[in-house]
Length: 505
Ligand code: HEC
Image 1 (tube, rainbow, N blue to C red):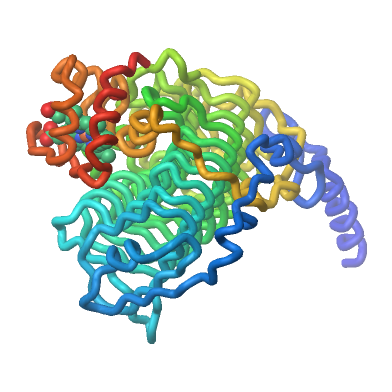
Image 2 (cartoon, rainbow, N blue to C red; image 1 turned 180 degrees about the vertical axis):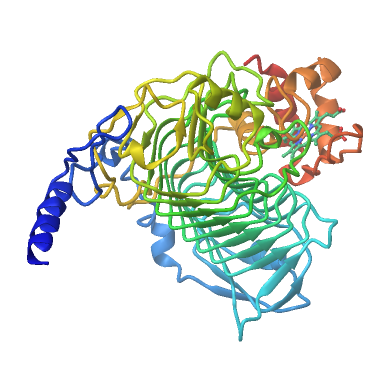
């Protein structure tokens, strides 16, 4: 008995020490763990960010004026309070039903639902309204709402920086749940989002983002980092979506890259929901049963997730060439480079995978159900403890030279970044990037038709575009309705029409 113990101890030490003297298949397995070994040192360097340091808090106006609290009770309009509010104010919304679209175009507004004995302020679009909350102001905080029954978005940001979107319960709000577009420095945390046709949490063309502690289920895409940089997605529970967590580049958008994304410490379970994305949309190409999807994004690190029961694959890494519903963009690199797969717990993935993956497995003479699938081009990627998983397509992956991302706490910035300065001459461009690009790509179909198609219809007629988008009518049977944009105001409507027609991509 004693001898056996000693033997086990010696064996144990050999394991912990990081070497395994055995042969498994053809390859000697190197055992590493995330407790020892070096940590990730790359990624975003906040100090080198030129826009840092110009915080807004010391503007004289703000010092003079005490922040107000405006209260909204059932029967009143939240928009009326926003109209009265000044920068620095908090708007408290008491429990009850509110059916409206709230536009926040001022800076430093906190829109806070009051929760009383579990009852929340509920924004209900009744299946008729498009958007619940649209903000373009900076330093915007929205908390504690319940949002249901809209057709477009629950909470959409249009070029607002330093946002906090927290503790909202969102269900069946149409195309997107939480959608900050073109924002820098933002937090999306502790939200519960379900029943969304496209992405439940959609970080679009944004930078320095933290998405944490959200519960996201029954949607097509769970959490999506699209054409965005420096994002951490951690501690989320992502269940029964078509695809769980996605980091990718959609071609044809004005911002062309996705990189520096850390996906860690998430539960990514049974994302097998049949795909109900709008036909032709990017997400409609996601095979049901995809835990994590990396498409054309660079420097994505996947660490310490529990990834289970996703029937196509636990982790699917692809270039644009092998993806469905993708039109190429000559300015976007189509390949995922430098993806790092650190330790993850993977159970029972890939058990009913798609035929393309089966074909790939045949080329490696494998008939297993894959945890990890890599298809197409891309270079510089790595993995640790590859012997733990059933894999296909990762032969060219090196062993990573780091084991964890403990040194990176967040990519959100300690100091607020200054508002995006919008010169009147840029009004059309910013509205286009912040609003239209979420649904219109240059070449391919997104939610709406391509800009190429629109240019053909409206050639020299920006006034026609302005008129249409102020009050869209249903034109195409196979597309959803376009939400009205009249709130942008006449000048911006015309400017955005001109800008759309001027694009050459
Ligand atoms: C939530 C998604 C969405 C957003 C945001 C959006 N659109 Fe659209 N757009 C659509 C859809 C869907 C259609 C197709 C509607 C149809 O054919 O019935 C469309 C159609 C159009 C058309 C074609 C009209 C025609 O006569 O065929 C134009 C022009 C247009 N959008 C411009 C814009 C502009 C400019 C913006 C930004 C201010 C914008 N859209 C924002 C979804 C969107």
